[in-house]
Image (cartoon, rainbow, N blue to C red; front, side, top):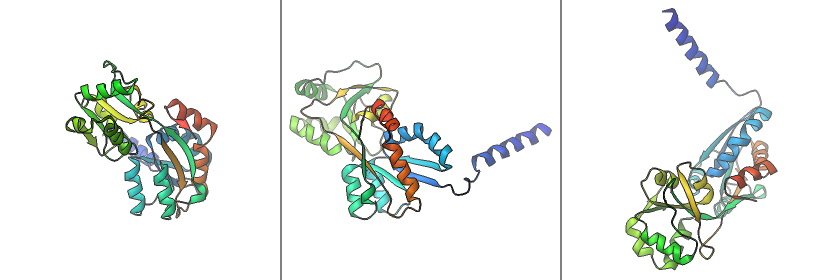
Length: 253
């Protein structure tokens, strides 16, 4: 009975620790972010939280999905989305235009399951052959890269041939599917590929087919924590953030 009572007390203590209120004057700062933004804030966040007393809540999802959530009226303080999506939300009054800043950009690449033989994608001809020879391919159904990938396949004249063996996924799980062996080749932003341990980056698209995805951030028009959100933007454009972003396969700024 005594031991059972001690377990109950311990569990109660843990619950209290997990649900302690924030210090007076501190806030929960909600950030809609790309995967790499979340990774950067996981590194930078603890020092920020300690200094400010604020708690960072970072939600990462496909950028177009986060844009819809913002347009639907979900509360947030700061968003880091693809640049044209950020611009759309500035125009619609959801984001504050004079806070908009470019944070990072990345090319698109091809992933395989870790340990698998790397195919040749070094030239346009080799890339085309690799795609045609692949048993299965996957990429996002509506990500920042989706339109560009589809155009690349059209340019190569192989869109129809690839369609039967291509899986378009609605969530940012392309690399995870490749890691699990569900598809042979994954296509996506290089930084996202590098963030998943179970896959390897074969390489970037050939230069003739490559395109950059640019991510920019801005604070919410109606946030009650505007200065705190501005501080997070400054953090994401700091030299330390630039180091983290570069190490994850993206170019800062």
